Image 1 (cartoon, rainbow, N blue to C red):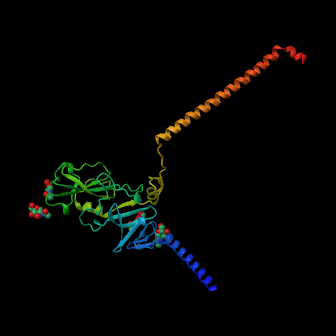
Image 2: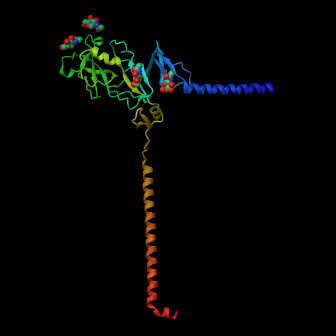
Image 3: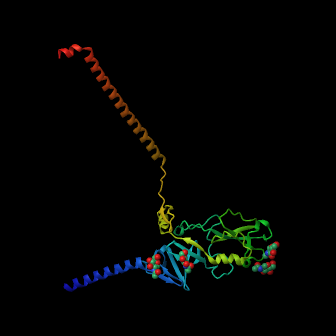
Length: 300
Ligand SMILES: *[C@@H]1O[C@H](CO)[C@@H](O)[C@H](O)[C@H]1NC(C)=O
Ligand SMILES: *[C@@H]1O[C@H](CO)[C@@H](O)[C@H](O)[C@H]1NC(C)=O
Ligand SMILES: *[C@@H]1O[C@H](CO)[C@@H](O)[C@H](O)[C@H]1NC(C)=O
Ligand SMILES: *[C@@H]1O[C@H](CO)[C@@H](O)[C@H](O)[C@H]1NC(C)=O
């Protein structure tokens, strides 16, 4: 009997200990991969204990390089700023400075592929390169002045160009051309035209920044939009309050309630006025009576 009690209490202590170790792991674990020594919440590395970080922010570590897959593309994580909540990403296809297309389309031709996990205010990438494929050589056309030919993809009746867009301006591809891919890059206010593909490559190689926000991710899970709460760095966000639209029936009920309420209020006001007028009249009558019959007073 005693031994059973002893073992069961030992077992309980062990469970409690395990529980605390688990809690400790959740709040205090950090991993390292290559140059990024401090991968911690909300990020986690594939293979970390299940309590570490958030599974929506999982990086893989390949050849000592942390990789994030989003948008959908593959990016090396070059820097994590836990203060700004920003990541610097470099497309795996551009990291070595080799000529080619981005690993993922990143954007549709009309707009960005949105990802609630990385939807911070900062995720309005200053600028981008559009990769455009044409069936004719448009290099000599004045409208194509900003098109830089992508040499490795241009051959045999296929002409691929990179077109820089610094302010997300409306872009209408030239005749015989269509947008095939997009790559975000840092904003270069001083440059509108890239004369060589080496210059394009240099910017692509430097990567771009995205901001993460766990709050916005949570808003999205609750089918709400997230909005900036404070612009002080680091930005903070809140879920936008929902303004539920009324159905027609609800609207009618509200109108009916207002009408009925108004009528009741009007009735009460009329009642009060009538009551006051009656009282005044009665008082005046009483006063008139005493004035008309002074003998009453004498006799009294
Ligand atoms: C890693 O970053 C977290 C959050 O910014 C911080 O609390 C922790 O001390 C850092 N650890 C190391 C080893 O730098
Ligand atoms: C990472 O970003 C922080 C904040 O912007 C900066 O201070 C730091 O120098 C960067 N580190 C690297 C390796 O780029
Ligand atoms: C396209 O035209 C330009 C100028 O007309 C020329 O320099 C270039 O070699 C042409 N490109 C190809 C791939 O034919
Ligand atoms: C390019 O065109 C030439 C001649 O028209 C042809 O011999 C060659 O096979 C083509 N190459 C490709 C990759 O289509």
